[in-house]
Image (cartoon, rainbow, N blue to C red):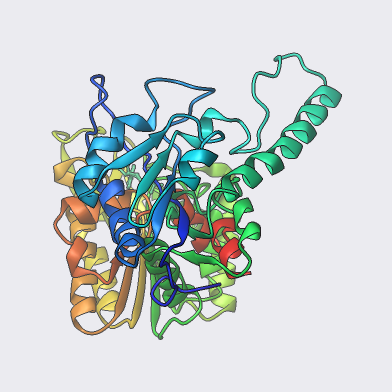
Length: 416
Ligand code: AMP
């Protein structure tokens, strides 16, 4: 693996996987170009060092070629940010001559990789009543043609850069498989470098006390996260909708609060593992409850284990917030994933806001604080705290899988 800062790009062609999966409106205009801007430092680095660029990405979930999901819609915006002309290759598999013709400082954007099923390596168009044998044969066929697809992309360039953290948990042609064609010339882009560093800071090199705050709606979607973290952290704060399954598991009354009865054995197992590992598991002790799921509902504050019938837990109460704040501000590493209340409704956003505030205070005290994945990222940005924490991850699913302790194929392919 090489480093983008020390690699000599002069006269070289770099094929760069970025995440240009931006939202487009009906007029096919970009409504949020955060992802394009996020890739610019890497792209500019190659150009400023005398290299040329072949940029590749997916856009949406096409089932084949689609005008609506063409990357030609983003050419003008990319030109604006790069300050140079961007050539467009309308077929990512037939761009060899355009790639060969690139001169130092020039840029070629390939059409949406997912116009080809080979990018993901999953068969398309299988009949619904296909037999198991037919499915197996189709899978084998696409895996075979995926090799050729990957080889063609690799043939365009001298080095490979992966800067698409949003797809790092996928073993696709452009995100992982292509790396093997560049054993001595593969590297992370700056965005990936930052994400990888953030993951390592919390999962490999955490300073203690290490606190994780896991919120959100369901235990089922974060079970692997909890199982992984319970062996690593000193404090595990479980809040939001998923907290009520834990409170019920311990015999509390939770009224109409969100919960998953079938996950109660898992919740008990997490509680047991916390004890076994000497982890301070901190659940909500006080809850703001409402008599309906609405911003204008009647509300009151009750102990979390004594929620009356007809009422549901919507946000953390002050006593919970006080407990959690104390833990967070005295931590040296903090990882936060998932809001601790229904933050989309202003009357139930206070708990989540206070967590963001506590993270900001911990950061000021010198702690490393990571907001990793999903709705907590939206919350921290909306609430104006994104630049007051150490790092806000850009990849939802990818970050979640990293926190689950999985080796992400996009990262492993570069590091191995
Ligand atoms: P997740 O995607 O699992 O991180 O869940 C995020 C969602 O959890 C947000 O839409 C929140 O509104 C929701 N959430 C947080 N706390 C609660 C709660 N007490 N009751 C219902 N939903 C909640």
